[in-house]
Length: 409
Image (cartoon, rainbow, N blue to C red; front, side):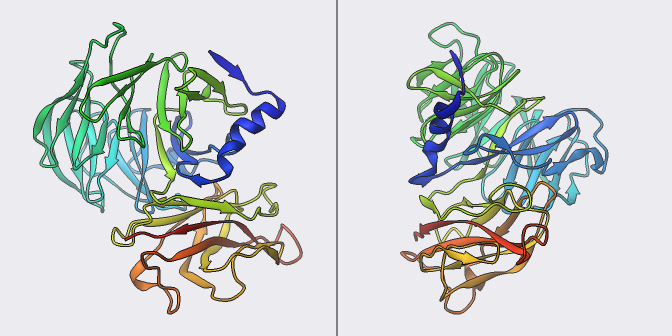
């Protein structure tokens, strides 16, 4: 059942995730016409700016008008489209494309070392520079999920999900149809839920399996699911043929997200997330975009993993930098608000270019942070982004809100 957003109910439903720990609040989705990658701000229920990746200028040009999936790899955005996998930096500049022709590249995922691409009858392994390091035959592969040191692969030919190791070798069948209800089971996108279960988008239904492949539940979010991603509050964001909805598996209700014309939106992937909980605080002032800038985290708050990134959204194209400090604050600063400090502030350099979509991304290099700003296990820091905004006010600069989190080993 789909329920449209109305007035205060809409605000309450989407604003409930503003308080307390946050995980996936910004998501990447692919767009077919014109081809590109968009960012969905789940908290606000809106698209962030323009396309963060514009594939109309991709080189080599798209041979087939099919954009399948986009993911974040460190601070880059990788897209499977046409007959290639394209790499872009956070400002939307193309870095490279796979050289050899990859037949119908489908879903892709990053296991921390390699990027894996489902390519019809082969599973492709890519290095972090985008070069192909392996191609392994499969019975059928349409999407892939890095999972527990292995790979889950959607096998549409046999209506099942297969397990492969990271040497590209078939291990076993994880789950297969028919499901208890008799509904068609054609697995496409796969996502891991916070409890370790696997969520499967299968066109006309969503299915949940436990970590051993046992059937848990079947959900109907709407007509013709295109992509799915779990949210931090236990619900799912689902792109449908004619709408984008937030689906509550507990109640079975689908809430239509207003203002999001789905166009040809497809698979979803996290753009802002964190394995350690973080607290958002200190509301930002509006900038020249008419919106208030927002900062978020991606990766993990584990110092030993060294895979923590920051991103800013809803900010004007230009230049800025991330900074952090140990203290809480909320005082006027420029045309905005300073949310940490005023003492003990540390800049994360170099600064970053803000894309035309109003997005900036920066890896946090734990090993080369400023003296006095060492991020160690057990330490707690607040992060914020400051940016030039000469059109936004007399001071010529503004800042986002802030996030605060404690780091782990």
